[in-house]
Image 1 (cartoon, one colour):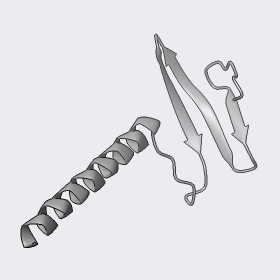
Image 2: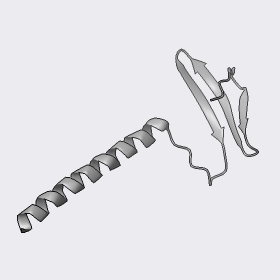
Image 3: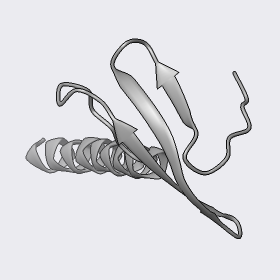
Image 4: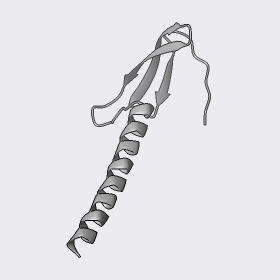
Length: 74
């Protein structure tokens, strides 16, 4: 992992076509802007984690329900 210190209006370049700019630092909150091609998905980490957990839970429930249904049919 690369760890950098940046100040307001400073940037970080990733490859040729992604730029992250520090817009504002206020207390323990940092606002950033990301310029990237539309083909690049940009998602918040906690959103991805929540979706993954929800999908895992749904799979578990589906397997449990399927198991209950197959028992009733026998």
